[in-house]
Image 1 (cartoon, rainbow, N blue to C red):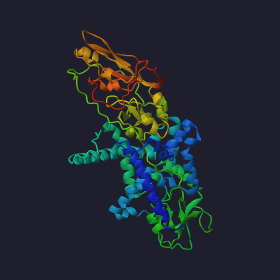
Image 2 (image 1 turned 180 degrees about the horizontal axis):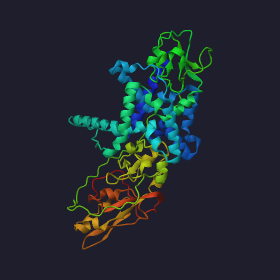
Image 3 (image 1 turned 90 degrees about the vertical axis):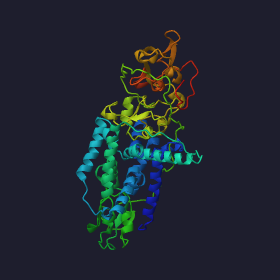
Image 4 (image 1 turned 120 degrees about the vertical axis):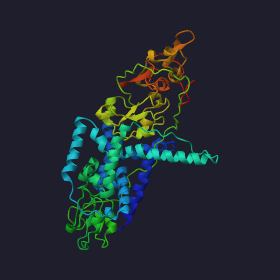
Length: 519
């Protein structure tokens, strides 16, 4: 096929896919039902591999479809389904609009040693030390961090600006959403890869995909035996070189009528650029005279576009009001382990399966999930960790387990989640303002959904908190509600391996969203 239809179809399809992924990560109003999340993420290669390894079921084998697709059509995944690849194409096009020479690529020899060294290194590190390199280099996870750290705050600012303007006209269809960032140091990796992929794609097209990305290198190996490829008709070719100039993968050696299949991402720019229709896309070997090294492409639709992600819309509020401590607390919280999200089962399982894509972080309605720095060690860098100083885990919410694409957070029924103990509350009496300032409080007890924190007589009319760790689930309501700073009077120490909490005898709370300070 020599028609430009393939390129137009690729642009339209990839645009829809990119929009869907962006909506997933920036959806702050819970407009998209979460049941659609798996439809889109099913064909994301690295998350699918990890989910398959964990579940060992063909139902989680979306990566197998990607491999079959690659065997049939070549690296169509990279141009049609990979959000980072599609984003790089968009950035490359912007670069070409700004400076014309950025659109003139030309044939370049492959960085073979770098490509395969990084691929082998990624496999070796993953097998021996865990997912550290996979976390850094997985294209889906890189895109997820970009969107969560940089694009979503912009969307929130625009929303707040429009909400303010509409409010002046008594139109309250939009509501103000607080814009909250993360610890400054957590931006180091996203910024580094934003600059790396951004600059490379802006100037050199798909150089990142064909030099660094392990998924691209692996699929490039598979595509060497693909059935459908871009191929030369030597009789028609005049060696004008337009195809090589248009090839963003720099893989067309037009002088020798050769296409490096392992680097071709099937963008079909070459088909459009050839004035002599000497390039076509079809079954390799149908014409003799075509060298056995040509490239491939498509007529696939195996996929998923749909909208994703939902979360019960939970607006985080909780403004700390009375009582206001007059003294700073002095006894540090002695946490022996960080608190990892429900569904992880254990910190070890989370570290072994999470790619740090940040989808759960951006989806968390209460924003209690934060990117880890040193909590899990280097193996868990950027993976989600509970930060109860910033928020708490909503009792009636399982959003993070619903959206996780790798099964690092296993799906949990709501009733099971309510009995999963991810940590235990610990009370520091000498930090509590009931003791230090003789002031009535009770914020921790009022906010506890299971009543694992309750009040007992103390002095005179004062009551002071006490904890029942058997029914505590470690949700962090109490820690977040405690008004004492800098150290809390009550804190949650994480369970390295999650356990089952006893069902509380008292009536469980129906707290669905953060309320104002609990008094």
